[in-house]
Length: 370
Image 1 (cartoon, helix red, strand yellow):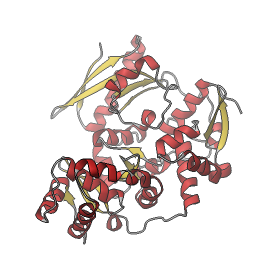
Image 2 (image 1 turned 180 degrees about the vertical axis):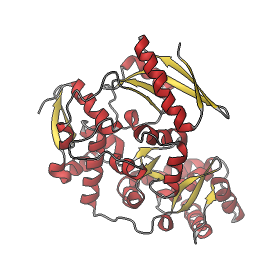
Image 3 (image 1 turned 30 degrees about the horizontal axis):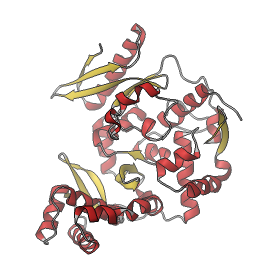
Image 4 (image 1 turned 90 degrees about the vertical axis):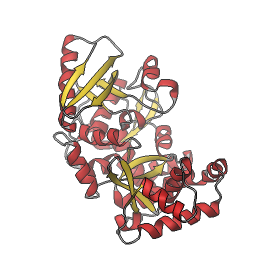
């Protein structure tokens, strides 16, 4: 089946941003539903990750999302590409086993750079496991202090690497912040009933979730997102079977969930405007972002190509600007930098959309839109 680029973009918005319903399928209504729908959500920047939920859960506040995380509707760990994501708690173990193993295999090179032996890293895992046993929960600085007390140097990047390594091994995971710091718990205590699928079921599950939330998109994007080999990416798509459908966009083979094709390609209602955080899956979920982002605008979104993504303003699926925010006790000051000429109606819609963000963070908005 062939579809146009415009149709593909609309279908991505429906699946990835939950802007409409699938026929016969309810849209996710809570944090657990959203993270399960998408498979995983990038979350190295916590404020961005919280708003990624807020975008998809109208009416939620930052307090609502944080409370859901305390209820363990999602947790943070490093399941793939060595990057922190929100994941469904019961799936954390198999995701680490399936996709985190490649990042773990590269840990020896990082340890050599840091002057850290494997023996010390393993001892750190044991020390942290003992310190957190029995329902313990420690901030990052407290974990570093525990390691130092046992004679394990953990200042700066050493501490980060040891916490990453223990999490990558499936011993720790990141619980909600205590104050402004990450907190860590034992994964097996935080999630006492993990799901343990076999490898083919795991590959099929992550393929289905990725293409359901991000499709239509390519096998190469799937491999890039998961960090899987090309062979495993192909195997996952095959294992998903008829739960996925193939389409062609400008001669390129792509996959999506069949139910998505029942959504009218013109489902967007008027000039749809969204204000997305910098690390939202809308851009981070792909290697090829040309459907959503013009080539000439890439330097504005990823200055210096350093992996730090700016927050974006999106109009009918295309990135049209960036934004920054500054919080005071009662206000959120927002500065928008347009990347294309904006009409009066678009400007009004953008300002209206920022009111939704302001409600999410519990502040009064002040929008500067040159």
